[in-house]
Structures are given as structure tokens and as C-alpha cells.
Image (cartoon, rainbow, N blue to C red):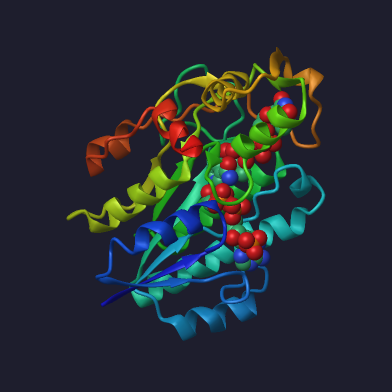
Length: 281
Ligand SMILES: NC(=O)C1=CN([C@@H]2O[C@H](COP(=O)(O)OP(=O)(O)OC[C@H]3O[C@@H](n4cnc5c(N)ncnc54)[C@H](OP(=O)(O)O)[C@@H]3O)[C@@H](O)[C@H]2O)C=CC1
Ligand SMILES: Cc1cn([C@H]2C[C@H](O)[C@@H](COP(=O)(O)OP(=O)(O)O[C@H]3O[C@@H](C)C(=O)[C@@H](O)[C@H]3O)O2)c(=O)[nH]c1=O
């Protein structure tokens, strides 16, 4: 029985994999929280990997606090760069499969067309820089790894924009949301399924892949869709990013081009509204 180790098991993506795991009993699933796989202590991490001896690693653990990363730079880089470097080295030596997850925040946002896997990266915040360093280290140490770049992830589990909007729209009469950052949301359950589909596919072609739901929207339009499905009375206004200052800059445009993953792994990707509905059932 193949042993799949899921790091960051209590995060959004890790939790969605936990939901799907029961449908795939032919795998021995190990869901590791931060005490079982510790990404900020490389010595401990090495020992933990050797204990689990996985055949496959889904690396869902990450430092994801975009604004806090601006001041917790070292911690963000340890988790998002050095830990994945070690995991990639381990999987390469043991001939284990590795799917690592990266982000649209590796881009600077200056493109106006959907970004494919070859598009030039140029992170504009610490989180994005740490994730880009992680991508490079991952594929350097394990050229057989798969790296999936995704964007604007949400789920019923963990913290995310959808849940923040649901809360704010219940608490307040009006909210303002930036309308000049464009991308596409990703329902973590869809991404979790895509990871399993890739693992089960007859082919394993290493490298970078993009995955998000279909659609091209701003955070403001995303908030409007959340308002529509939640039937909230809150007034939602669109504002420029300059009116919503944050410690970390976000890219103005980070829409991912999904042609490669659809063609190679034959994936059907749901439209963002279709998946967003799942948050309201
Ligand atoms: N969230 C998003 O919008 C996006 C995420 N991504 C990427 O997708 C992947 C999955 O993200 P998502 O599920 O949303 O992230 P979450 O923040 O929901 O989960 C991250 C997980 O990592 C764990 N973790 C954090 N620090 C450590 C540590 N020091 N040691 C061990 N585990 C740790 C957390 O543990 P604990 O639960 O204990 O805190 C948590 O379970 C990540 O690689 C992320 O960079 C990409 C694009 C968008
Ligand atoms: C809560 C709120 C946010 N915003 C803005 C801030 C920001 O520009 C945008 C998104 O807000 P958040 O801070 O929730 O999202 P953010 O943490 O930037 O989300 C990112 O997380 C990392 C982990 C990723 O990898 C990215 O793909 C992306 O999903 O919405 C408003 O305009 N109004 C609001 O009331």
C-alpha cells in the first residue's frame, strides 16, 4: 500500500485532502500536523521524514500570513524555502513522489494576459519571494517533483477571504473591497481532487503547473458573488488598493493560465461560481 504523507494537515488544503481520503482507501494516508511534520526546524523535520518513510508527499504546509511575512521574514523563508528544499532532497533520494504547492504571488502583477508556467516571476512581497525560492529549490533538489501554482484559495476549513467576507457582511452595513487586483479563486476541495487525479494519472510529468477555478475577477467581484450566494444585505463598494493599505503589496494581475494542467492531466476545472456555491450548502 502506497503511503501518502500530507503536511500541513490542518490547513485548508490538507483538510480537504482529509475529506477526500476516505474515497481512496487503497492509499495509506498520513495526515501530519505541525507537531508531526515541523517545517520550521530542519533537524527535526529530517528525523520526522525518516520515521514516516512516505512513498508520496503532498506538501500542503506553508507560511501563508502574507502581511505578517513582511516582518517574520526568516520564519517565512525557513518554512516556504528551506523546508521544501529538504523535503525535495529527501523525496529525490528515496525515489518518492512529491507534489508541492506554490502561489500566484510569485508574479509582480504587471501582465495583462493570463500567466502561463513560463511567465517571468518577480515577487513583490516577502511571502511571494519565499514561495518562489521554494519552487526553485524544490525543482533543483528533485527534478521529478510537481509544483502546482494556485491562487486565492478558500475552503470551509481554516481562514480565507470567503469566510472573512461572510463574517463582515453579517456584522456590518457596508464594506469596501479592492477592485484593481485581478485573478481567480480556487476552492481547496477542487485543488485537492486535482492532486489526487494527478497522482492517479498514468503519466507523471514533472515541473510547474497552474491550477485555479475558471474565471477572471477582482476581489471586489468575488465579494459580490459571496454577497449574492449568502443573500447578505451588506452594501459592498469597490475601492482602489491605495484606499486599502496593507503591509505587503499584492499583484494587480495574477490570473493563471490553466491550459497545461488541463491538457496533460485531462482535468475539468469548475467555474469559480459553481465551486463557491459549495460554501453555502
Ligand atoms: N491560502 C491561499 O490563498 C493560497 C495558498 N497557496 C499555497 O497553498 C498551500 C496550501 O495553503 P492553505 O491550505 O491555504 O494554507 P493554510 O494556511 O490553511 O495551511 C497551512 C498549514 O501549514 C501549517 N504550518 C504552518 N507553519 C508550520 C510549521 N512551522 N510547521 C508545520 N506546519 C506548519 C499550518 O499549521 P497550523 O494549522 O497548525 O497552523 C497549516 O496546517 C500553501 O503552499 C500555500 O502557500 C497558494 C495560493 C493561495
Ligand atoms: C478583508 C478585506 C480585504 N481586502 C483586500 C486586501 C487584499 O488586497 C485582498 C485579499 O485579501 P486577503 O488578505 O484576505 O488575501 P491574501 O492574504 O492577500 O490572499 C493571498 O493569500 C496567499 C496565501 C496567496 O497565496 C494568494 O494567492 C492569496 O490568496 O482583499 C479588502 O479590500 N477589503 C476587505 O475588507
